[in-house]
Amino acid sequence: MKRSVKKLLVAVTAVGAVLAVGLATTTVVDVVASESESHRIESYGQRVDVDGGQMNVFVSGAGENIVLLPGFGTSSPVLDFAPLVRDLATDHRVIVVEPFGYGLSDGTDRERTTENIVQEVHGALEALRINRYTLMGHSIAGIYGIEYAARYREEMTAFVGIDSSVPGQPGMDTQFPTGLLSVAKRLGLLRLAAIGGDGYSDAYSDHAQEQMKMLTNRNSISQTYLNEMTYIRTNFERALGTGFPKDLPLLLFVVSENAKNPEWLGLHQRQAASVTDGTVVPLPGEHYLHHTHAAEIAGGFRGWVAARFR
Image (cartoon, rainbow, N blue to C red; front, side):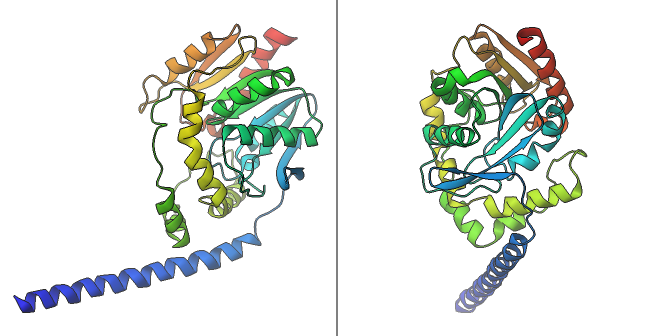
């Protein structure tokens, strides 16, 4: 019996030693890789002063303004939206805002409440002297967009959602393991977990994908990122019972079949029906519709605008 216990202790010690060496290795590799990548990340856009920090924005094209807002955790909104921006910018002025903690923007210690995020995004547009635009947003930008419209309705001509979040959608009462994720980040495990496919289409060059991966390694699980993740539950709770102003036109591009949430399309149809002028366009595909359907989104938007505003 004693011999068996001794063998078990030796085995456990050996496994512990292997794990310790492995974690030490991933930690060192992550530190070295992060330092190397910091010199290889290329600048783009321009930086504007907002609430004591600098927010990165990208402006392309000429014409009526479209402001693009990303979904939660997008590593580089400018690079992520690039195929859509290229199409829309042929006849519009497109402004991509990278909120604090995203892309090349600074991080921030301010709480990531919907109210603070909306105020900061508006501050970036004020810095650019942009005061009339269509607000177009992906994913959680649908929740932020409702608050944005409540504050700045007079500046908005419409809201366009790209598989945008809606109040009351299932699964948003989750408590995320931010502490565990922070530890995994420090140990370099997230870099290891990120190895593999990324879901980008052929519209993204290998170089662009490499840049986005490096920005993912830099921005994911940062303190700003974790703080926004912590507030997701609260921000969705506060959005319950809210909606866009009845007189604000809505155009919602939505995944036509969401296996995890069969009511997804219906939720957006009800949201569109809550305003005077609401349209839903179902598209086949995954949540990041602009990765694979940029042309359909840009073309659908043009046709929708032409039927209403010109």
